Image (cartoon, rainbow, N blue to C red; front, side, top):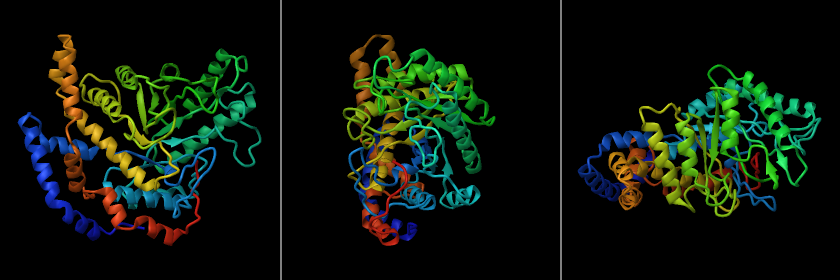
Length: 427
C-alpha cells in the first residue's frame, strides 16, 4: 500500500496547534542558549537510517515465531513497506538486504521500484551463518575460518556474489558478520582461525569495487558460546587495518557484553578513522535486538555524543558511518517497532547536537567532573521531540508517526492485501 498524502496532512492538521506551541517554546529556549534552530532542523532532517529487509516481518526466537499477518511475501513488498515507513517519517530512505534471503531476480526493476519510493540501497549483507538448501558443504564448523579450504572458498564466493548483487542495486558496501567460533575449549586453534579468516577476507577485499567499503562486524558470543573468531572491536579493527583503506569496523549495539563502554569504543574507532557502520538496537541481558532506546536511552545519547563529536570535528578522518537498524521482534508490529526505533535514534542524535562542546571541553580540561556531567545531562534531559517532529513535518512526514500508522489502519490493510498467514523471509 501507499500512504495517502492528503490523509497525512489532515492527520497533521489535528495536532498542529499543540505541536506549534511545543516547538515555539523549545526553539525560543534553545535560541537563548545560542543554538541556530534552522541549522539544527536541517541536520535532524538529513539523518537517514537504513531499514533492514529482514526486520519487516516477525522475527521470532529459536523457540517460536508468532506471525502478525500481512507480512511482506516478496522483495517487492519489502521495498514497499520501507517506502511506507519513509513516507511516514521521512527518515528511512534506505533499505539493506541480506543475501540469500532477498536475492533480486531483476536488479534493475528492484532498483527502479526503490527509486519510486524515494529509497536507495544501503550495505548488502552476506550470510555464512546458515546452510542454504542444496549447499554442497556445511558451515556447521565455520565458514571463512573453516579448517577446510573448500569450505572457506564456498564462503568467499558467496560474499563475492553478494557484492555483485549489491552493484546491481547501487549499494556501496558489504557487511560481513561471522558466527565462526567454538563451543568448547580446545575445539579450535585461535591463531589459525584468525589467520584463515584474514586470508578469506583478503580474497573478498580484492573483489570489492573501487568505491566500495567492507564493514566487519563483531560479536562476543552466540551461536558459539566459548569463542568467536571476531569477538570484539579490537579484532575487527585489526582485520580492517590489515585489509586496507576500504575496510572498516561495524558496531552493533547488541554485540557487547553487559556494561561494555560502547561510547568509548565509538570514540576510539572514529579517532582512527575506522568506524564504517552502526547497527542500532537495544538489549537487557544479551543480543536481544530490542527496540532502540527502549532499555538504555542514556547510553544511546552518550554514544551519539561521541558520534556527533567525531562527525563535526574538522580534523576527523572518519567517513560518515552507515546507519542501520538491526532488530527483530516477536511481539510488536514490526513496522510500529521500526517507527519507534527511528524516532529514538533521531531523539538521541538531536540531544547530542545540543551539547555545548566548548563548555564541555573546558570542564574536562579543568577536571571539573560535576560540571561535565551537568552539561551532558542538561542536553539529555531536554525534550527535543518538538524539534524532531518539526524536521519531519518540514520534510513532508507525520507529526505523530505511530498515531498516523494506527489511524490509517495500515496493518489491517496489509492483512487484507497479503493475508493473515504470510511469513516474511529472513530470521
